Length: 247
Length: 347
Image 1 (cartoon, one colour):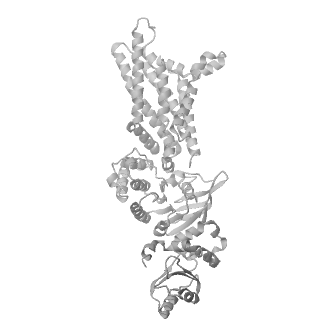
Image 2 (tube, chains in turn orange, red):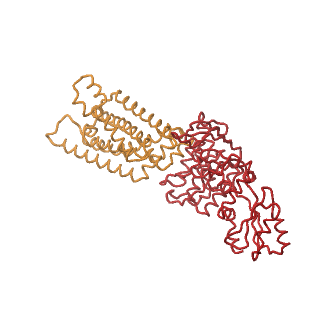
Image 3 (cartoon, helix red, strand yellow):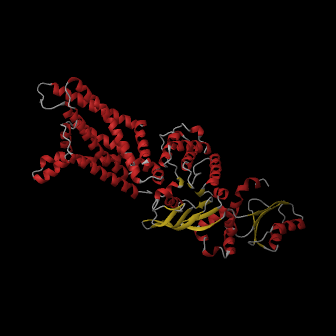
């Protein structure tokens, strides 16, 4: 546990003292600010559909959300393990009295906490809305839960590819490709006729998931999906780390 | 305290380390000597748990590295060959991080950091960012981090590589000091380091242990024929001839550069200094220089790790071997004299 906390603390601190962390945070907030502003402008127009709330759109309803996620997760995770391997600090880490699992989880949770930190300021948008109209906090909480779940999934994928290479760019591109693969069912759903396959695709459709969350529907199957696939990737990461020992 | 049994590491068809076994006793300083690429770092990585061996086992303070990895690793302090640190961290942050990785509590870590700061003389750079440190300081920070948790075994892989002479002396001083409190395994390709610091030496070449023993016993075993260096004033005409006639003299070589200087070779156990002195007195020669030369560990090392010279029978039949080696021309003969060369030239 101490090993986990130690690596997590160092990783987290790394985001805050490196320019990368702040560049990502700035870009992330800029994008989401733009997204929020656009959504509010759009819904202020009398011609807009009446059934939608701004946060419906904000969480997963626009391309902003998914682009930001698909961009941020690889960038946050790309250096986690590849950099340690490149500089050789991995040798110190793996000869310290900590397990590979602790190292992997420490780094993963470091990235996850920073990811949550990125989302933190967006709570202001909800607060802003609450000042002007009655806001149901249930869907808001569900949206953040979904955002956490999908983020956890993507970051686990990124941690995995980071363990496979010394090159951060390769790690980032690899994780982007894998994440895109996980997002693919969102496109496929419309192209499948077979009802059984369509069910399966729907189960994996992250876009659909966020749509539910933003309406306040928390389906435990979604959470099981995120947690189990994240766990699988983290397990693979620690295996990859062990297999690459000494190299 | 540190035991290696039949350690072997293969990379495909290439065997980097071949069946190496040795133990380092409690409080001992063992030197691991070998040319670059001999398998020192591979061996050390297997000892510290970074590289799983193809075959063989490692025990650290009684703990098997494969079955009790965390317990075994806790007893090891390791300074890798290329001391890799996090360049963006401050020295004290790094040490605090390492202390946490080693499982030290907050108060314990604070005390340990204070102590290693003092021992490794890094107090002055405590607040500095690691990326801005000189190589010497980085090495010291690496050492400080390796001893933070008071390991019983300290493994140092080429600790003085890339340092300037002043830094080398400082690090050696520190290693000597650490050797008093820890069991120490020191890998190096620098010979004086081993002669200076180690109680016992294993010589590794091409993944195998080619010889081991105390520096003295290695000298004893590999010293070969005795050699006396002699300088006569005015280079007497019959000098060489007269020396050659002395009983016990096997060969005489003139120094082609300086007139009147000779290298006189005798049997393994012979000491030719006295007969040479008496001869000089008898003939009325003025003796400018008379010195016995011993094969340095460096010569032994070169001979052990240079292919053709290492024959199985080398120990049993030293004569031919050494004559052949000594006859390797002025260069080969001059090498042992190098450290004192500066003083000899004026004569």
